[in-house]
Each structure stands twice: as C-alpha cells, then as structure tokens.
Image 1 (cartoon, rainbow, N blue to C red):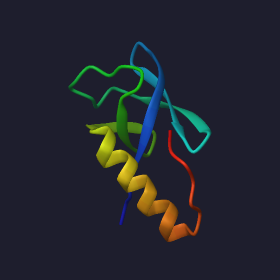
Image 2: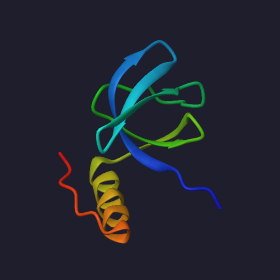
Image 3: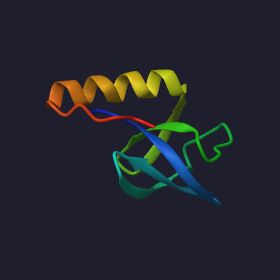
Length: 77
C-alpha cells in the first residue's frame, strides 16, 4: 500500500515545487500535474511527484489525523 501525503507549496519554479511537511522541506516534480500550482496550494505527493491538488481543509484534517495516529499533536498553520 502507498500513502500520498498532503504537503504545502512554499515555492514554485518551472516544473518543480518546494513543499513543506511539518517543517521538512523537499523538492517535488510537477510533471504529473494538469492544473497550475502556486505557493500556498496543498498537494498530494508520492515518490517525489505531486499527483493531485487538494483543498486546504482536507489537507489539514488529513494531517491532523496522521499526527493523532502517530501520537504527535502538532499545530498546523
């Protein structure tokens, strides 16, 4: 089973974005995205590729549930 994690876009340049997940930042490819991506968007990322844009409320609720399962109650911005 694979899990795509929602991450927040902090910068975009050409076909690559830098995303943030709980303070960890990494570059991901946007080559699979059909919709334009901008700073502040939330993306599902799997294996280094952004695969889908998601609504902010969905992303935050999903991250809250991940944190709850892991026993880490982290404040999301």
